[in-house]
Image (tube, rainbow, N blue to C red):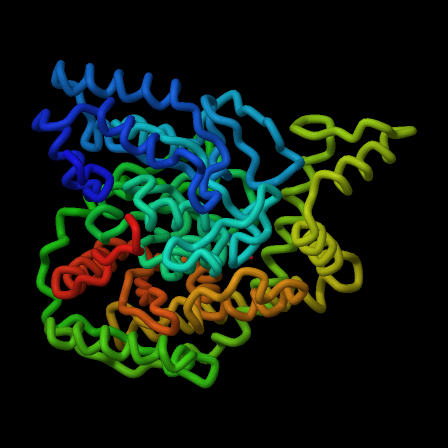
Length: 486
Ligand code: GLN
């Protein structure tokens, strides 16, 4: 099968089950494609480990004990800890770190039969919007290597877009699944906060972090999400005691009469004309499928930026205190006493963006500023969540842009971190509210770059989001287009 690397998760799983191809053949093909590390997407690859997993899958396929995704390759964002691969979270402070256990999400996908190809580059501790903050170098966008792939799950998005893997995991704290999916022309979904376990996901901002799948289509995302979700209450205190679902079951439901809310704040001044044009056309496709567009308002959209950039760094400053040179990874060589060791280890191990967030976080939590910043931010966070509930009285789901523009040029925002923060405006609200959100390819904009459409659902409405996305993908072919030279 010469086109193995272009097959969807669904077709690969079927081909493996019907023995048209073996798991070892599939793994060998994808490993070959990662040779030379295109786009700097991978941080760790170990073909021995991958082939051993593939052989185990072939044995299960032969004896009838195969899981639903048996033998299908996947790669994990490097914030998921793995026993068999190094885990760095894109940081020098964890260089060479090996975890004694697998993250729950990694474990569940392995139980479903998936074979791990390796670990994917990302912004350091998932802090970023362009994958330029990795200690191991930037990732490039397969559609135009002079551009960023988005972040922080940039390696995941680039790897799927370049057909280095059929699917990948990502994490989304403020948009890190949706935005890189949008920039690289693939599909990704962040479920409701608490549906996928955070156990073994290196924490950035614990009240926001969620895992989710990134693949080419909504259907493939549904297959992975079904395996990833489900309670893990003994190991993650915020895990919901709610069974996973078969998210593929409702994919072919009609969307006749579905009310799609279009927030006016998402289509204001900051939105680039090319992105707006692509989205308008995609919304018309939804109308042709029988959906109804309903104008709505999310009045505190703009506030989501200061609110998020207070809350996320506050939590990060606390979470990252564990990297002290004692328990994990890097420790400075020359120091005079314990405090000096802490200081030097952290000064050497963390990159600039991480240091910036730790300082911001410590500041907004400090005595005298806590009430002025952190507490206020928490109050507005609640109002943002209430705004969504208000909006969902008039609509079933919400559609809008993922980002104000297509992927920008590498280095374009260098020295201006706030420019990256501002570009998060459309993904932050759903994150702050803990709502499920996804991005699906919706057309092309400036420079021929992909444009993603964001769909936001109410709590636990992942199936509805995936169904709507799937229907659109059956009527359009944006998700099937691929960068040149694949
Ligand atoms: N761009 C946002 C940030 O830098 C979101 C990152 C994420 O979702 N992990 O915090």
